[in-house]
Length: 452
Ligand SMILES: [Fe+2]
Ligand SMILES: [Fe+2]
Image (tube, rainbow, N blue to C red):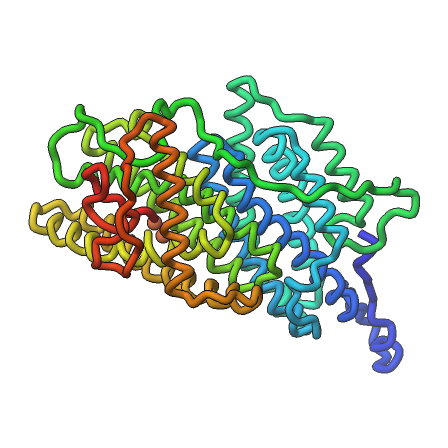
């Protein structure tokens, strides 16, 4: 690898008269700064874009696993950003190198989910793994120990990510979905033309790279066919066993579309040049929602309800992503999530009383996560209102957002032949006021309609 320098320390031999030849490899500080800038740019572009791409992956497994791995990738990006600051590059998210933006746009031209994941797991992630391993091995172990330790610390999670992706693609292949080797090759050639993951010294004879268009997440979320009912909203089915924890496990499991919705929140932050912590927090929330979905999945199965045969409210994705980013954040976090604590605490208490610890713990841990989601929401709503010079106050924004969601979901229920109302009632006056079905239990259809 041309970028790595080697020395036999001839100066020391000359001065000391010793024959001892200490061989050493190294990167210069200036090179380290440039290389880290490339690393960060690609990691950041991938994490914040692929969050939006969760909605184009039909498989529940892929949605949940990718959310988890993107969270690990973001922890890696956070540490790289801190190291970049040591090298005097601050606010790296505002200085993303344009060639990596274009590279990820190229990746997003993949024609379907398997092609996208194929290029990610056969080309990009392994190339990152090789580059980081090499860097850790060849940099000065004492002088540049923070770099070495950072890379070594994050390599195991990247390895787990690649192992999952490889295994998943193998299983897809067994089902007859092989991805696109031509696309893999195009992405590989693009990467080589940029100088690889290090991003330096691109080959002189590399062909010119086209400018790729900005990508947009889909208007409808993809969902595997195994799920038999795609609904506008949540509703219970009469053939479920009679047990108090089943509707609450169902509510939890059907946070499934919230994974995709939070992915859209991450992706749309890019349009407003949000600070790094915005992406960090919402990628964490995306993973939390994946965990909530999995917790509900496990409970439903344990109670003998097939999670694949319950109504999945894909309408939540369609409606929430049709709202502006500000209204999406306001309705989701300040109504759906903020007002869910009271009923959830009641669920926890009832579950302990019934001697059903796993149902109690399902919601106890959920509350821990949801508290942070509400905080993330209120922090970034204020920020967004400030940078867009919003004239309304927060209370009115939340009220308008809630109303818009209710109007749209009601319309969608009507279209899909689900229960809907003539009169939407009163505008939202705050949690505990019984003024929004988004936030209160029981909701319009008689089940807890807590959203996220
Ligand atoms: Fe949740
Ligand atoms: Fe949440």
